[in-house]
Image 1 (tube, rainbow, N blue to C red):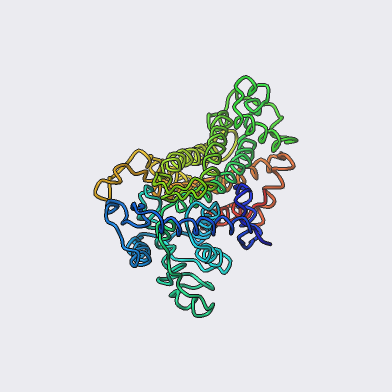
Image 2 (image 1 turned 90 degrees about the vertical axis):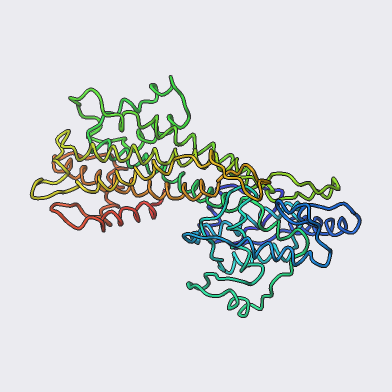
Length: 498
């Protein structure tokens, strides 16, 4: 299957999920090609007729914007830009995010406001389709003049034929790929290097990945909550629709409805309760999970606007006969919402860890640490430690990046977004919350098995989920090596059909 770029059609998160799931290849549509070529031709003509300097086209970059570059040096200027800016350090960007960077950078060019050559854009598409993934590093972006550093590391192999890539399951010099495919380095024209490196595709690719993960985690959090609620012998009244209609936040209503649906038909949920209230981690779950849902929805609206925009600089406007140096590469819109998204996902993890603790605390007829012979066996004591440690790390990561700034480029770039840091930390928080939910699932399934020993059944949906889970993770009767079960729980969530 193939996805064809069409600048007249919006690229949505759902479409990106489909591209990923169906392993679709990419192609440039006729309208995309027309716009790309129209913009490049206009820029060529503009350079011939305009005597005044054009930033990034006939001048240097950043604080060097007042230095004019001769026509003979323009191509070398763009090549130098890519080489000098490839300064990434730290851990490598995961392959799934690098693929998104290639996709979203090509998408950025299809609107026809960047001045890129058609062959340049096609090369990005080819790299995606052939699974030629440049090695990009997580550290180096200020999220200000776009993601200069990581995008330079992306473009160095893809466009200039320098550096390393992953190809056919191994790391190699990109020259091997070029030789095998008959590719040649692309000779950059005026403004192209700037078009390649200015832009928010490092931040936005992480944002897309994190949103897709967050949407999945939000649904799974409701499912695991429902299991924990029943295993804990919790009350269903805090999830009644009539209660939530008097405070009708959308996400709150959705969470309450999801729990009612999951627990429908449970013998445990409808039996008499001696306790009047449940702890907040159960009773206030609609409010907490719901707030996360509403946050995810808002962040999604911002990110979808971003990925359907031109975010490099300067912006080339052929119809208006203008080349305008502005600030569309600035990452503040993404930095702020990525901070917000990290907080929302971290809270899903924080409340999950609290439910795990309630399950092991020898309440409601459940044995201490969820083993039949506590003392001789530590049981589920330490999985909760692990969940608490992970939740604590997520809280530390949630210190907002977008409020920080360190000026750069001789103070020309005097307020930066730090959106690159917001992006990578949000990715980590999403992974953390998945692990915390996996530990809650591990505990809740164990607790439900003790209810089974009492002769009680949960709902058909919960029983089926636990039966599927038991194909991967067994009941723990005596102490065992636990990390293998936790890792299996993580894989279960990753592979679960929703």
